[in-house]
Image (cartoon, rainbow, N blue to C red; front, side, top):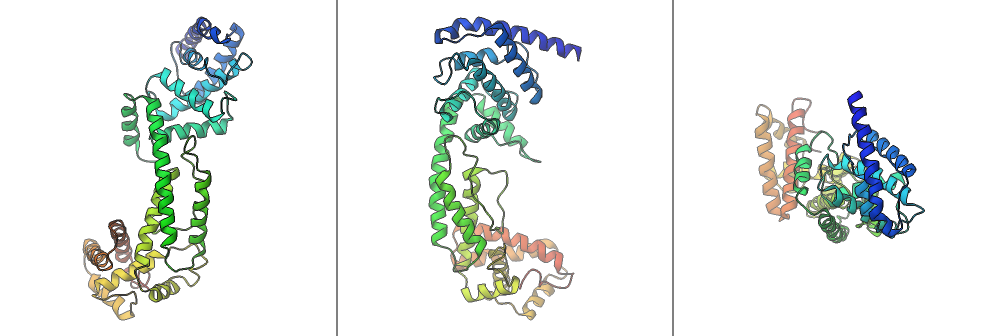
Length: 382
C-alpha cells in the first residue's frame, strides 16, 4: 500500500508539472491553470481512478486532455477547470468500459471532446453523469465493442479491442454512425413489411408491440445514443432475441424473427390456426402468449404423420408417443427436423423462416422427449 501511495504521489507531481507547462499551449486560447486549480483537478482525477479501480503512472491523461480541449468553442476561462475535470472523469470511465488499452490516448481524448461538443451543440463542456454514461455506451456501440459480457463473450470483446488498436478511432466512430443510420432505415422497412403481412389474428400484445416499435423510430438517435431504442416489446417470440444485442440491432433481430413466424402463420389454414390457439390458450387474444409455437408444433406433427393442416386426434398423438417411446432423443429430433424441411418446402417458406422452423423443431423435440413418459404428448401438441 505504501508503494502504491508513493507512485500516486509521484504521478500527481508529474501531472501538475505537465499541466503548468501546458499553459504555454493553452494560453493562446485564453486558457490557463493556476496551481490551486491543478490541485483540485488532481483530486478529481484521484477520485475517478478509485471509482474505476485504475492506477495511472506518469503524467496521465489530464495534460493531453487540456491540449485536446483547448481549441473547443465550448470552453472558456470561466469553465476551463470544470471542463477538464468532467472530461477526465468521463475518460476514465470510457477506458474502463473499453479495456485497459484502446488506441492512442490523445486520439481517444479528442474523440470524447468531439462527441461532447456535438452533443451539447458547443454550449457546454460537461454533461450530467447519467448522460455521460449513455454517451460512453453510444461510443462503444459505434465502435462495435460489446458491452461488458454477462457470462460469455469475453473473447469477442477482446478481439474487437485488439482490432481497434490499429484503427483511427474517429474514422471508426463515423463508420459506426453511418452503419446505425443504414440499419435504422433497413429496420424501418422491415417493420413496415411485418405490419403489412400480419396474419389475421387479433392479439393485443402483438399489435401494441408493433405500434410501440413504430413510434420508436421517431426518436431513435443515430448520432449519440444508438444503443437505445425506446419502445415497449411485450409480445413474446418463440425464439427469443439475445439480450446482448442493443438498440437497432435488437429491434432488427426481433422483427426478423417475427417475420419468420408470420411467414408460417399466414400460410396455414386460418380456421385451424385459431382452433389450435383456442385449445392452447382460450384467451390468446388478450394474454401475453406466442401465437407461433403451438401452431408450428401441430404442423410439424401433422407433416411427420404424412398429413397437412394442424388438427391432431388423440389417436394421432398416441401414435407419435408409440413411435418415440423407446428411441433415443436424437431420433425424435431427426424426425422433427425432417418434418420441418418437408413443411418448409411444401409451404415455400423463405429461407430464414425455414431455419427458424428448424430451431422450433429442436425445441419441440426436447419437450417431446421430456413428456413422452409423463402422461403423453398433449403438453406438446394440442
